[in-house]
Image (cartoon, rainbow, N blue to C red; front, top):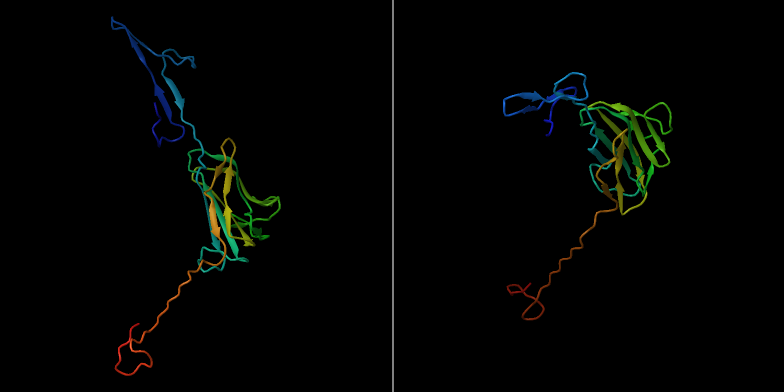
Length: 212
C-alpha cells in the first residue's frame, strides 16, 4: 500500500484483517507488538525533511543587468534552500566553494539578509579555506536559509559554480551548475562593398546609364 499524500504528521493509520472459515466463524488479526488481543495493527506517521531544491543565482554588481562578466567585475552569488518536507531538518550546512577564476570579497557574507563575519564565531556564517557557508541548527517545514557573498572576476573565459547542502541524516544535495561567461560579447565582422560600372567607359556624363 501507499500512504496517501498530504496526511499530517501524527496521523495514526490502522489496519486489520479477518479470517473466516466455512462455518462462518471469524477471527480478527492481532498486532503482536501490543498486549491487547485481536487489535488492529497501527502506526503513526512521522515527518521527514526535503532539501532537494537548492536554488543558486547571480548578478553582476553595477552591471546594468548584463549576464556576461568582465575582468574586474564584482559578482554577487545567492544560494537558498527551502525545507519542502513535513519534518524538521537539523544541523543544516549550506556551502559554496569560491569559484575558480574569482577572488572572495572579504566581509561580503550575508546569511538570511544579515551580515555575518568571515571567521568561525557565534554567527551562522563563515568563510573557511575557500568555502563560504551558512549554518542552521534546524529548519522547520517551509523554512529557508539563504547565503549571499561576492567575488571579483579575475579570469575567464567562464566561471562555473555549484552550491551544496547537507543535514543530519540526509544525503548531500547540489544546486544546478551556474555558468557565467566572461569577456566581451563576440562580434560579427560585417563588410558591405558597392561598385559602379560605366558601360561606355569613363567619364560618366549626365543622362548616362550606370550599372551598380
